[in-house]
Image (cartoon, rainbow, N blue to C red; front, side, top):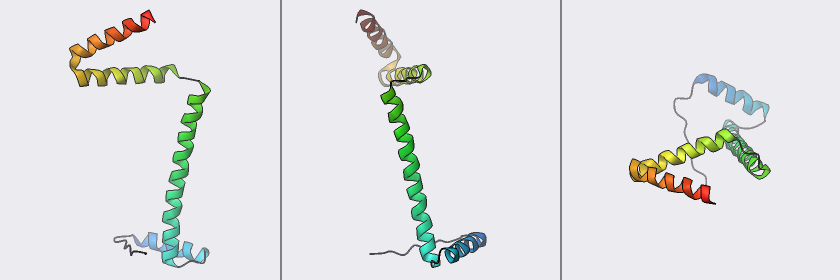
Amino acid sequence: MSKTIQIKGAPEELRVLLTASAARNFRSLNQEALARIKMRFDLEALLAAKIEQKWIDEAMSGAFRRTSVKKLTAIADKVKAAAWGDESAGAFLANAQENEKVS
């Protein structure tokens, strides 16, 4: 079941561009607008998938960046300090560091 979407306040330049593109692609104005909207969502999904795949590839390669680890550790420390208060977070971090030295 299709629904109607109205675009209000579209500049005349956009209408002219869309009309010209529709003519080039042998589509109605409505078909061209829908095709362009769908193409944009497809492109965004493709780009997001490529970025996610890059992260997966980096993680699987074992090539860690020291700066990334340091930044993540600093962020985790701040979160712990905010969640448990400065004193208990400090004690927690000291215990965690002691446990790392023992292992």
